Image (cartoon, rainbow, N blue to C red; front, top):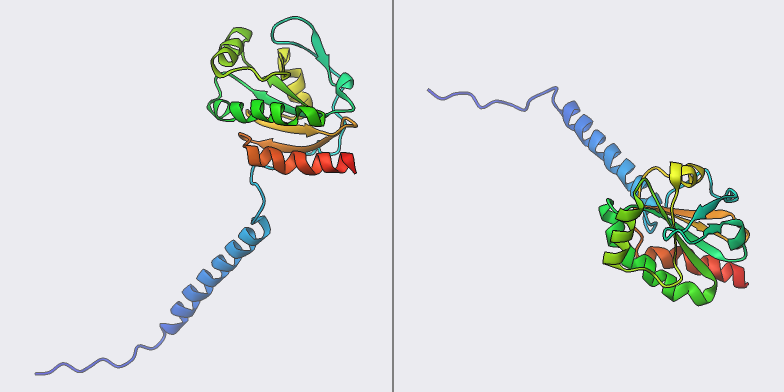
Length: 193
C-alpha cells in the first residue's frame, strides 16, 4: 500500500512571516545603532561636566615637595588622568601618556596624573618601574576629593581641560596615541585660531 502524499500545509506561512519580520526589525535596529556610532571612539564618553570649569583645588605632589593648583594651570591645555598602581589598564596606557606629555609639551599642554584610591608607596613603585614623564605632574588625592569633583567612576579616566579651565572632553578606559591626538589636535587648533 502506498501512503498518500501530503499536500501543502496550511496555516504555517504566518510563522515564517513573523520570524522573518522579527529578524528584519532586529537587524534594522542594529544597523541604526552601528550607523550612529560608527567612526566614534567608544571611549569618548559623555559627561555632565563637559563645558564646566574645573573646581578650584590644590593637590600635593606625589613626591611631597609642593602642590599644584588648577587655577595656576589656566592658559594651558591640561590632560588630567586618574590612575592607580593596581589598575591593569593604567599600565597599558602609561607609556602613551608619558609620550603624549613629551610630544605636546611645546604646544602648551600639561599632563597631570592623579592617584586614585592608592598609596603613595605603591604609586611610586609603579612609576619607578614604568618610568616618569618629564614635566608630567603626579599628584595625590587624599579623600578622593578631586575624583568626586571630576565625577570619576573608575580608573583609568582622562579629562581634557581647555586654556580657560573648562572640561571639554573625557575618555573612559585607557588612552592610546590616536585617542589623545583625536582630542588634543582640534583643541590646540581652536586655541591657535
